Image (tube, rainbow, N blue to C red; front, side, top):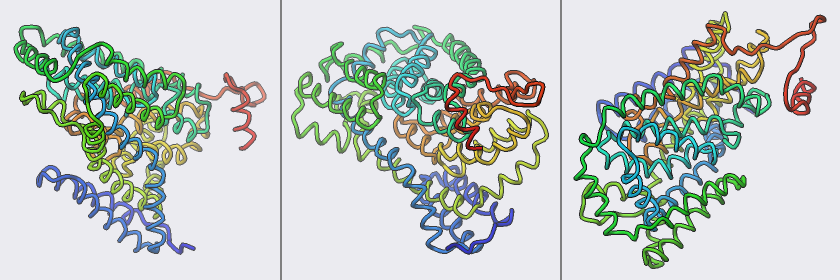
Length: 482
């Protein structure tokens, strides 16, 4: 049984401030990977946990339970590595790049790509799937059109996380609704008020930037070289677009992520043998080590050299180390102590929404896990929302406006690490171009202060709450539990 005492505020701040200093110093000034800095931060967090009375068993339990919650996500990361490798080998990714260079104008590439990523994410319920499939192809198309890779990656992130956020199939959407104890579809409907306007603003910005590019600005000779190299290395045919369709079909049929992605990877393997003449050894090697481009054209080889289980180990190890750090903070109640202090500054709906969003972003930065960035603020603030007469789906919407959208913005967060590895662009590089993720929290806070789309509980003349929902059974269960 743990004999740990409640930490003081300064004790809770030390590991968080320490992590920020260590990571900033290491990544910006020393130019090293974040893994070892996070390990050092984890040791500091463990030392502070011991100081407040936690035992080694407590610390170990915090780390293990944190990693355990992410086991499925880690498995998905490895499978996505296999999928990317098989899709490059079979020619699906090269075909998408080839046809994209033929069909998409530089002027409309950014908004078109953003919408495509959003559609895939809505259909699959996963920004990870969107980034690892259509996102990879769009990175190649953007390079061919002469567009800054960081800008292309930011566009992919915006579209992918818009779709992920509003999809009822999304894990993060369901987690946010569960954390706030509200109906899923009321939650999704509520998000439309802040997310759709933010997405439209982001698209307008991408349109404006896109009009700075034209056919003369794009390196047409470069496009010709890329298409020639792809056509020379692969048998390009529209049939190669079937593997991406497999992902969409399985998503519509609500097939779970792991079997869906495995099926898509297996389809890629079959197509690699049938269309590209790949042998069994080549297929297995690509699944393990990824595809290595050998066209003789440097820009094409760089685009195609990706994927494989081994190609994702950098990301997986980073996620595990970061989760260990977050698990210790949670177990030692450092985050709980700090959030209690934050609640004290809440005096209005606007300040409550702003505080909830900032807390989610801080959890993304410190706890490195998207789910925790929704769950912890949700459990900390739900009573405050109740006391102010606000609907729980207003809380769940606010959780996603911060915690979900900022999860890919830090390279040590699980989402940021995955997207960086998949797209080949560091999170800090695409950060300023992920316009939806940057704009949505601002729109949400602005609307709260202006009293727009603030959902309050309705009371009848006797002061009894009037519940207006689509799914009465679910809400009644929640009310009875209270």
